[in-house]
Image (cartoon, rainbow, N blue to C red; front, top):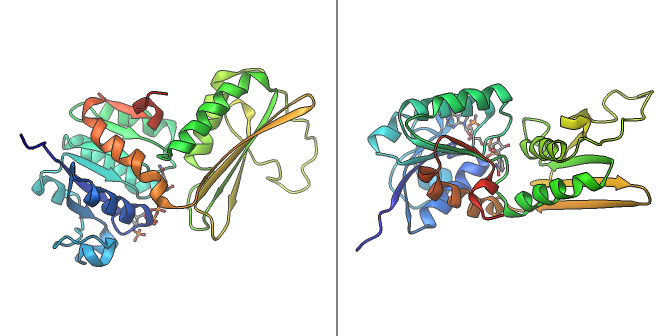
Length: 265
Ligand code: NAP
């Protein structure tokens, strides 16, 4: 018997992540890339936009996903577009996988209400190494009184701090409430101590040409520090996680946050 292939649509197909997602979906025999949306690349051949050998054009709007009978749509766009795209998918009963970052707690709450006819997986980081980094930071948190997060990304990233940094701080704060207060009384340069995240854990955002996505969690206690670092050198690092989510989303009711929920960690 022939296995059923999932029909996949991609938002932001002309973007850095969207192009890579199109290529990963097209290369997976269990998936079929059937539609792509990107307003600023609309009308252009997918071969030209995403380097995928399929004979159709990138569309202007999400209506193409209905015509193409999309089972799962993947969104890597910008926060304002991602918000609208997820709302549209929920209204149309199409499963969603999003890696777009910058969503607020209010967004998460509204997605939880919106996804009743279909499901949604939201992961600020689809790289398995980053998922493990967050898990290790959470495990280490109760044994240290001080911790800071340094996230480093390419110089075209629009939001700060990264969704990964925020989720890491949230999980560390949930794992320990015993954080020492910040000793700083004078900040000569505003922002020198970074932003105070959950649990008052400081988060520092670096934007550097040549980088992709990197993060270091540094924890300190008397006489010792522990540094946990993850580096994504290539956007291909996110693709195994994206493909896992695309295949799993139909079986995950409502909204699932974080790739680790889909892994046996
Ligand atoms: P990018 O290169 O700017 O790509 C975003 C693409 O989406 C652009 O082509 C943009 O077009 C398009 N777009 C804008 N509005 C749209 C809409 N309404 N419908 C469809 N497409 C739309 O950015 P990127 O580097 O690929 O990153 C995209 C997002 O993924 C960011 O939020 C980033 O933080 C996140 N990210 C997540 C992970 C993860 O593992 N979760 C990993 C890497 C990146 P225009 O440029 O013409 O506006």
